[in-house]
Image (cartoon, rainbow, N blue to C red):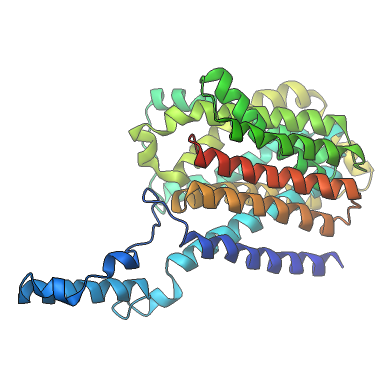
Length: 397
């Protein structure tokens, strides 16, 4: 049944999370916060060279070397709790929450949209706004209770962050529409086009031209999406257009946010609070759209969904859970990016898209054509190649 499929999916997500978490410890750059603490080659001081520096220095160096080796091994000098919670375990938990949150967001969101008539049901922006509001209800109590330090922001700081919130609102709203108009798997394939928009916006708005291998890596993305769309059984132009709008908004958010995110007051907030502020602003930006586009007919749309057999408690449950998982996976993604190198994050993000695509097909029993499988594989691998090429030839984010 669907419950059994959901349980199996959760287990699979947890196992897949081990891959990037395990690799992360061996793929760190000097600038990352979770780098290999002391490479073994740096520990290979010979005893002879140490003794030449005198007995006391030799003893100190040998002691320091032993302590470093112990740290690398998980060391006996640490408390027993370190065996239960260390950097590897922490990363594994982060990746598992990221994958689980993203996958279940897509599932809960799709169920909520189905209950409300899909993207043409008249409540898509209402659902989008409600999901963002759930995130606010999650983070504000953390600030009020002192569980998390609240961000210290001036009116000018909020003004600077406002455009990022606008593009975040557009990216989220466009994604919700796209996911509601077609199968989750198809929407995920369309979202794989985001690097194309990022590259174009960086070139046009920032004058940042990449090396040719970076642009060459965009070709399999475009070709893969085109091939996957040819015989997509749930093909919808509304889904395509909405996904492209979401991709453009996400690209603008990235381009406009680069300079702002480098400012000291933003860095001082930390990744979790940065996302909390952006989520709050995105919610405020969606409110005018909700009231202008759906407000006048919102009650009629709701009653129409109820007449077709949807239950209020089912709708509310899926909207709330989709909001919680949406906030969770985005915040954890921010935390992951702060813990690993951009390359590791890109690999993990590519694997995550595969997980979401496969699990959604299983949960919703979505039929997939051969062309869709081949095209989506090419497109997803293209996103990975783009990230790797961008990292190698400069401009890695």
